[in-house]
Image 1 (cartoon, helix red, strand yellow):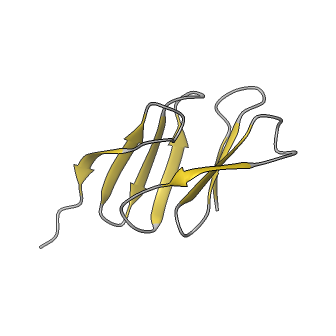
Image 2 (cartoon, helix red, strand yellow):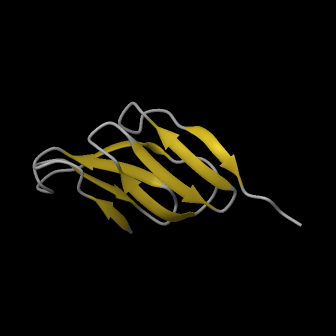
Image 3 (cartoon, helix red, strand yellow):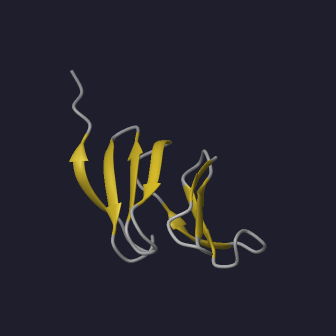
Length: 79
């Protein structure tokens, strides 16, 4: 699981299947937000409470709405 702590009480967690969850109470309770597209997550970070980035097996994805939707910023090149 990947964790990111972008604000005093906000935590994001991503499991190996790409399920993104958020906690607004420093981890006491969690809410499932979405599934990150693009396959298994390889890296994850939260720039702030609304801007998150994820690297997956097929590219880099960005969300600017706290993980509700994602756009692919960069596809993974395959040879």
